[in-house]
Image 1 (cartoon, rainbow, N blue to C red):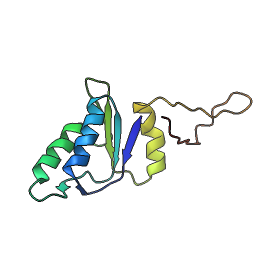
Image 2 (image 1 turned 180 degrees about the vertical axis):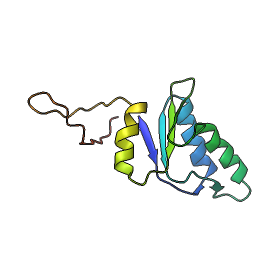
Image 3 (image 1 turned 45 degrees about the vertical axis):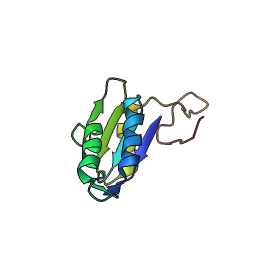
Length: 116
């Protein structure tokens, strides 16, 4: 499973902690745009930055992988769709492939669904 975070400056430490737990358990995270740097709780900015910096350890556009196989990728793309098309296969295998009747993959189509 991949969680994609929109760019945001403010996040709760509780939310960041849940993201870290997901990642430590092998979950994949992609952050687009600005990483959270200010906690919504007074006096918790450093704690938030420590959590976020512990997840996103590689340079922008580079994938980091933890011991459980969880991937983290951060980027500030101007063209989000094209950036995701290029980088998403680096961290997750597709679970849906759309193909023509002749068997040619339609790679320009992105399919998003939920599974339980």
